[in-house]
View 1 (cartoon, rainbow, N blue to C red):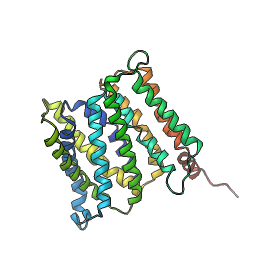
View 2: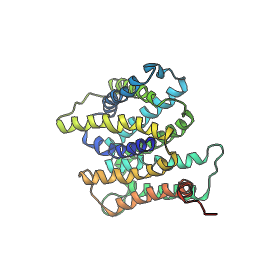
View 3: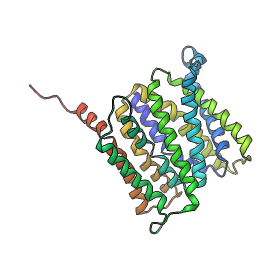
View 4: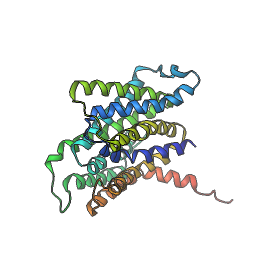
Length: 296
């Protein structure tokens, strides 16, 4: 059951780029503040029904630093990226985080960096270059979108770092994610008041996108992912997370936010294929686990 929770988070994250693109022209910090406020309400439900209630939020400072730094940093960067670059390209670059997690995990104590890690990283970089170098016909770098590309790449680094550090905090209850969301909403609101002008949604479609962002990719997904990683099959979930770029791109194309093209498909396949190659040990362990025992 915990692994199913983790799968549901992957499906919800596949809608992040689409919903962010449909949310209008709201500044990044304002969008983060509103969606994380909604996400906090979602996470408060399991927090309040837990024995001990709000006392679970009494965690060491380093736990809050990892949680709030990861959530606030990633989403502020991501929302800014889809404002500064085409959503499909920003999404594909930001979804390099599974590849970064695999490569980063190989550098942790007790792990070794092998050929398939290096090859997977190289293939992923080729896919990223395809995204940022060409739009439409041919391959030509679009310098006007460079800030958005850099924001998306930095977002990928932030989320990979948050995920790798969170693996060391397995004893922390999943309900504390509600506190991370609340703190992120407050920080985003402060940044909005300091650096941005308020822009409210102009219609029902934009309001709907914002509410869905808060309920799903920015709310329930984090709680579900935490349950899956800490209590489910983490190898299976790690491998499955590489489906996110493909699902995200298909959602954008299906709802008319991006045109279909062979170069776009090639980029998505390269990024996903590179990540899967880097995760080769995971697939080997899964195959070994599922193989029938030999008859004596």
